[in-house]
Image 1 (cartoon, rainbow, N blue to C red):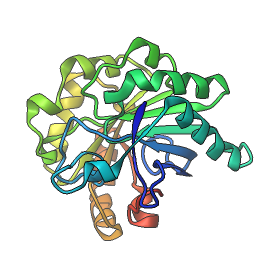
Image 2 (image 1 turned 180 degrees about the vertical axis):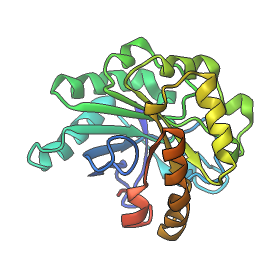
Image 3 (image 1 turned 90 degrees about the vertical axis):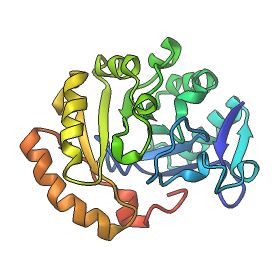
Length: 241
């Protein structure tokens, strides 16, 4: 049984859209948003998956059998005429439920779908899961997240991802001063710079444009990739888009 976020209409948060961030930005994808997280980022735009001081846990989480999750994903992919071939598992923190993820992800990989998993990089993936994932989108949190260092940086997990050629580090940047911290993290774990993306922290198109204007320059100087946030630009970060 997997715990998913619940859409306002009561359905599990499984939807077709385009990837808005990272190296596959713009790719048509089916998204699956899992509930629960082991961090508490103050700028998080999916607080409804974990912040039970502000949201009703019972109202926001829906348990769904693993087999049904796979069926719902396949239905969304097939609804596109079979043109959507990428599935993005996001959250929350998906690896909190990695044991339950293995079975549905094996079904999806078995029919040729490409699987991406988005994670905060604090949990080492199980070997059974690692073999099914085509791409890891790893987003370690910096001090701007206001999580304690011991919670947001787990050396064993980040070393695991740094050693995988299909893992990309995506760091949220709020201020120019965050760049120094990003550089230190990249160097500490020897993450190849061509697999590192810097992304502006922004919840609306205006803030996104303002931060993007200077962050693009810093990415060019440091040899990092720049990641936009298309979902903010196009839909303002609306749920299920």
